Image (cartoon, rainbow, N blue to C red):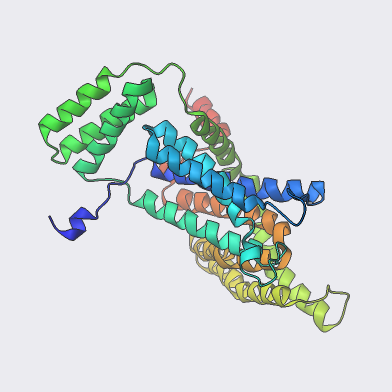
Length: 354
């Protein structure tokens, strides 16, 4: 067996949702920790010259996460480990300012920019893994066997059982050994029914995504995104005018200067997007504007966090919402038959049919 084959790891089909859970837990830990410290006036644990930093609690939680993964079986343990490890990582990275400054400055202004870059990198890894979902027969069969093995401990609910049987069928269609596939299928079918379930995160995720889709598909959200892009095109020019004519613009720092410079660089791209929309088509214009939103998320928000710290968080949420709305609109323009119509339009079409 070649070295490449020996080092090839089979990807867990549920890896993406667990990494997502890790990221959500880590970001939540950072926000809750910062909020608690601000509200409580930055209390310290320890006395007599000793200070127990919350980074240490983060390290302890990451240790617990590793022990859970190494010592116990089943997908549920992986889910718990993702939460525990995510909280630990959030507590750890929240103190990054202490480890990149000579004076251990927790309030180092670019700390949030550093944290943002790390989380964006994790999201990119998650996105890459979602695009490379397991397709070969051996990995599919191994994932089904993992579900079957965990089902021997606490049973399988309907969703996991259906997922396992579907993976077995796909593995058979891609040349899996029939004897192995049959053995895995028998193990899955022999699992008892899990009456309690452990899908709390999946349920919350489904609810949030359903609510978000309802907002994203509304025309009001689309109009709001266009208005935001127009504002992003006009506002930096207004800032320059206020600076040039000394009209009471806030004192410029290095971070705010870089942020303003970045915003000015995006203005021609936004103008190009609207001109393309007007002269060619809405679809081509939105494709250009989509790049503006992506660049703001990937690059612009780094400068925003470096300048405004935690106050930059609403900007990230606005840009993420804008990206979702633009993606949906582009999908509707490219493949209108595959995009579900809003409920109001579906009801109207049913009434017309009747």
